Length: 194
Image 1 (cartoon, helix red, strand yellow):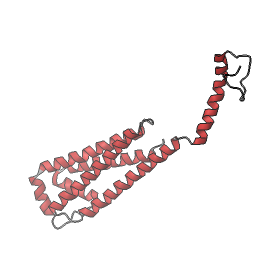
Image 2 (cartoon, one colour):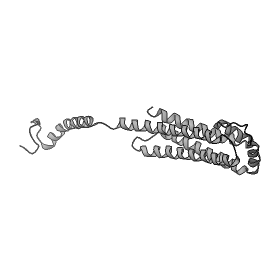
Image 3 (spheres, rainbow, N blue to C red):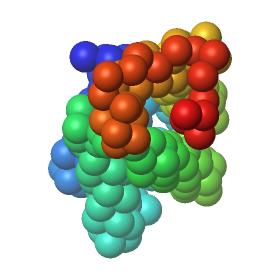
Image 4 (cartoon, one colour):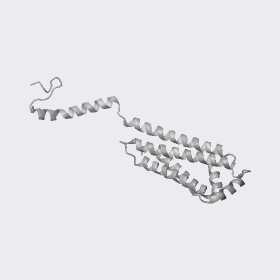
């Protein structure tokens, strides 16, 4: 398997965001657990204010869970594209991966904004670590794709050798077409000479 790192990273992020979406379904405890998964200490002094605000706004929880689930689906799609990619069209896979990482960064940024509005301490650093991990994953996937693309492009020596082999294979066919079956083609003769 040529794109093993890309497949693993896409599957990893799909599982992470799917678990976060599943955890967020559980109301106030779900938000606390999701923040704990992100690395935020739940024993903040102002965390009680979050509990009251979340009780008031359950659609916000549903939107957060749906946003996390959409990101998980995008990473699943990137995983499938990495497994069954078309070598003639690498742009299709790259665009799916790009959209997945942009969406993940956007959702994490929205979590930071929402957490800052609720007064949750320590959320910025936890989100910064997750964003750095996303960026490192994206750079690793790009590096793997570019190295695979560079390995697939033949060098100039390989191209000239392939052209030489094709010319040797075409020489008997050219002699049959020209009607000169009894003469061998020599490198110093041209097709037009008789």
